Length: 216
Image (tube, rainbow, N blue to C red; front, top):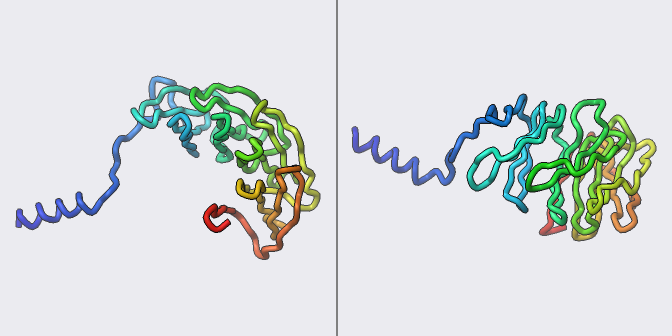
């Protein structure tokens, strides 16, 4: 019986290629994190950003230590992206009254800029144009374009009866796509001129997008 149990234990170890390496306590010496929500990994600095209702915690990817905290109010929003060309993180402001996107230093989490937008539902980054795109969602039929070099809003596209929700980027063709749930369409943005190229009727109630780089 002991031999059988030992064999089963060995098989379990061999069969499992992943395991919990470390549990990171979020209530820590940096005042902790309330209501932890979404996360974002920055490959440029090997830093994990973790949001909560009282800010962001930064965790070092090598040591698993909490290395910094960004004390911003209600930062549990899921809308965020990493800007690889400038090593910045863009995160939507928390709460209904904070209509802004924050530009953060990708290594330290320091707030570099607060960019006012109408509303923010999703964010994506286009490395070709070095610009960040912010969808307004149900609350605003707009798509705001932010220049990642200087964190300025360079254009706001008025979508009229459409509205932009989930976003994804096609860097190969320098385009950004967005879902319009109510209109059952997917909008195509030509990022070379930051204008709507066309709307694709997809039917039903589209909710999310993903881009396949291999087959375009």
